[in-house]
Image 1 (cartoon, rainbow, N blue to C red):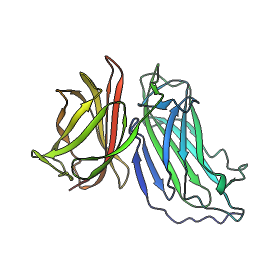
Image 2: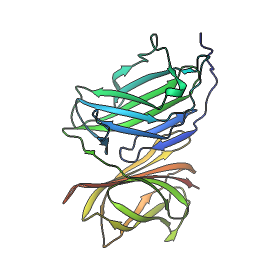
Image 3: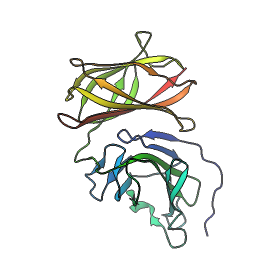
Image 4: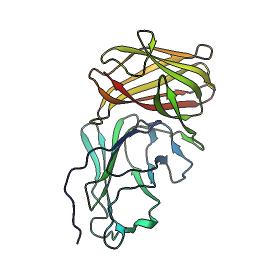
Length: 284
């Protein structure tokens, strides 16, 4: 018998996976890191949202905390996922551990790893993969919303460098990729700012950019941290001028609030290189 707590648990953490743009929402369950792979090899990180058909996508949640223990010091977790093409539901899985899972000792839980197969999807189509991992003894959960496009091939990387930095004035960021950027500044009305004014254009200055040549395709998006909705998403072209990149007239959200900004660009030639970062910023 399990005494289930039906009380609501508020959002405790929202994170955007830098390369793919996947939105990760934690409610009562925290974790050290969340990694996404393509294939069974854990060096094959998914570095963009283009996934080959008939691939295996692996989600690994490292050192999850917040699951409730029962009297035997076990935790019981469940799993659900869906794949959608726009509003059309293509695949759905409801908790496969519903009747037979007996739990895992809390002291032995180092990570949770789930593999989802993408079978018989159409190429060059936009899809959404929704994954929910939840605590059966409470309402605590982690949900992952991964937007992806099916392509003939999938880019993988043997090594991804994560680092944390400061953007503009005291805006903490998480960034990944082979390309190096020493400093990023947010500017409105030609001034460096740490907060943005709603519905106003802003500029993004990338300073002292290394390991990047020529032109690249870039994407950016705003995610509302209160409800996790993606409110703006844009594709842009960028070009390096000496050691700096200037991106002008980007769009700030229309309403005030706390947002997560996601930015990524990829250079195809002369060598494939990429860079992505996420940061939280207030809009007034």
